[in-house]
Structure formats: C-alpha cells, structure tokens
Length: 443
Image (tube, rainbow, N blue to C red):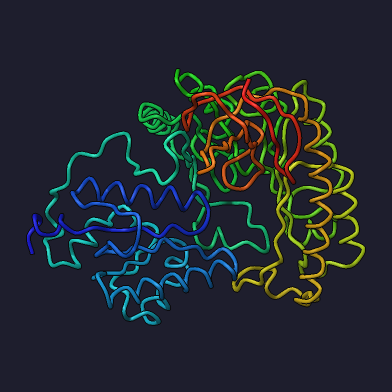
C-alpha cells in the first residue's frame, strides 16, 4: 500500500476516562490528521478504530473491555484495524495482547506519539520514513465544543494514595514547561477557545519537578496574558497545596473562575490516614473556612470514597456530618474499588458490597438536599454565562463560572427572543430552580 492509498482511510477514536486521557486522544487524532487521514464521528464510517481506554477502577476497566469488544465486532463490517491505547493498554499490556487477538495493536502510553508509525506499520508502509507534515503549536483535534478545551499541565502523580493506581499506570509527576503550555494555550485561543480548563492529577503541584517549587500561580499569570482568553478553570487541586498565594490569585484575577475542584476522598482522620492522604478533618475545615472567607464566592467541587477498607459506621457518620457542615456545591461519590498492586488491596476489614451500596445511596441523597439549598443563593442575581447548546424547542443551555462542563448543574433559559450564538457569553438573571439546575433570562 502507498501513502496515497492509506490517507484515504478514515479513523474514529473512542474516548474513555478522564479529561487528561481525552487530551492524549486529541493529540493522537491530530497526528493522524496531520499525516493525511480523516477523522470521523462514528465507528460505522471508520476503517481504523482507536479505543483510548481507562483503567482507574473496576467500572472503568469493564467499560474499556466492552468498547474494545464493540470495536472488534465492527471488523465484520467496514472496520479493518482496531488499536487499543490509554490506561488499560498500559496497565494490562500483555494481557490485552493475549486476551484480544483480534486487536491489531496495543500501545503503551509512552508510544502515543508514535500512532502514525503504528498505523503505517499495520498497512505495510515504511515506518522509518518521516513523511508527516510539520507539527504546529495547535497540536490537538478538539473533541470538546470549540469554545473550551482542557490543558493538561502535568502527567503522573507522586502522592501515592493507598487506593490509587495512577502512579502505577502513569508514573511519577511530570510537569509540562510553562513556555510549551503558553504556546499551546495561545494556539487554542487563536482557534476559538475561550475557556481553558487546567488539568493534572494534582494541578497545585505544577512545576515542583521542573522549578524546585510549585509554580501554578506563575503559570496562571502567564496564561492570563493571552488577550482573548476569557476563563481559566482549575481541576483537581490537592488540598494541602492550596496556598494563600493561590487563593489571592483566584480572588484578584478576573480570568480565573471562582471555582475549585478539591478531591478530599473522606473526612474521618482514621480513614484519611489509611488512604495515605496528608490532610485531616481539622485541616479540611480550616481550608474550607479560608475559602468561604474570600471576598468573592468560590464554588467547590469535591469527591469522596465510601466503603474504604476499615471504614466503620462512625467513620461514615463523620463523613456525613462533614458534608452537612460544609455544604459544598458539587460532590461526587464513588464506591471503593479494590485494585490489585495497591496498598489498600491487602488491607483487612474490606467492606461488603451491600454496605458500600447503602452508604453510597445515603450520601448521594444527603448531598442532593444540600445542593438544592445551596443553589438558592443564585436566585435573583445576575451572572455571566456561556451558551453551551440550543435545544430543538429553542430553549437555551448555559453555564456560568461556577459550573464545569458536563458534570455540574446548568442554567436554562426557556423563553428567549434574543439572537444568540453557541460559545458566546451573556448576562443571565437567575429567576428560580429547575431541580438542581438554575433557570433565568438573558438581560
């Protein structure tokens, strides 16, 4: 086969897992497009299907396997090649190769940037020949709406929580140099992006490996110089590294969303210690009080694990009391997933699945009540929102700086007579609640 014949092929990437993995997939898609292949939106039109997998917890592994099998089944139709990459491919590399003989290639994370050579090799082309176009600063094929994008500022993790597989899969924490991030961000904004969501396993640790100390604030200031950039949002801030300096930057920098995603995982000191977390019930309360004392309201999202080994009824009650006291806007909950090669895997007093399920339902119901009450703070106020989508009935779906895409609540405008455009910003007066979401009108 010649290159001219190969670039007539179409590919589709199935994106699974977190937004950090999404960025990896977007960069692989760009490399293939840069070579000459065409990306399509569904598997039915693709000769090449790439499954960008997740393997963080059991549910993610099951989902990855299901999508791999689904891609393999497409080989009875138009699909010619199936490639598996991402965290499942990294964590279970040999098992994936042996367990899915129909898969044509399994790629480790370090070889994501060799995706073009992998495809060329599958079709018998010379992989030693560099016949790709020059890589531009915009090295992404965005899978998000064009007005926002994720900027992965680091990979890996050094925190080594006892339940977590990320250090095993992704390795040590590795920051991307400021200059490289600035150039990528500038190119994204030039392409139409107005909101950058900074992601890493721990954004607060950014730069410590490169510069000897965390440099998140300095990175934020650098990115803020990009004129047409409207919002900068921070995801996954490790609690004990949220400094006064960072809070001051969030408070004073108009481009930084008043929003913090702070995974806390639990509130009981004994469970936090067993998790190898570096915080306590008291340190969490002190941090949250400091955030609440800021001049501007800062929305907080967090995640918690229920059913961790050794979690007693008393530990669970401490978690519920913490949620009731702090009244955070957005909270997600996960059942503890027992993962091999983690310290928690061999811990005694593993909690029964039935108990995990009961506790999960209980905290979810509790948080829904808390969130409904919390949302009332916005009624009667005017907030700047970005238009996310327009429904067939003409109603609008918007999001303000206190909502991250896809996971938080939204703002609905049901009766609108104004001319609007997706990705543009509008002032919306909040008039009431629609479940956990807000309702309003453009003013």
